[in-house]
Length: 150
Image (cartoon, rainbow, N blue to C red):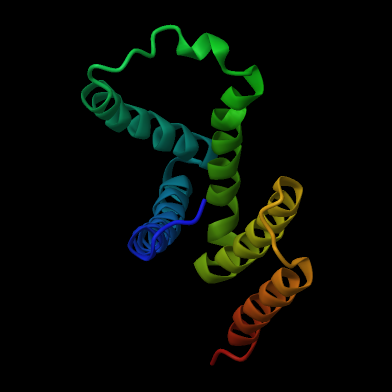
């Protein structure tokens, strides 16, 4: 199904905003981790996030019936919380040691490669060679920018 140009523009805008949020979240959590420990920082990240999310779920899901829906979801889909905790914990540990830019470049690289593998598996890539070339160009530019930075 093809998205309209406006819908695609909104999605791209949201993705850009999310990219900024991710980097800011990494830096804030890493700073917290240097004060209270990286595992505790991950704990507080998720606890505060859950407390923020609860009223949103309550008010934005009003009128929807989800009481029994959780039973029909395959159990591996619920492991995202574990993955999230491990991710935040690892980021809290690596960002202070690598710096925000280097950590972001490494994470971006792994995310792009993983995204490519998943899109190939799901049949979302029209031209695999072009996707690989595109990723190589983006990553080369990012790493060259880091390499030749004054």
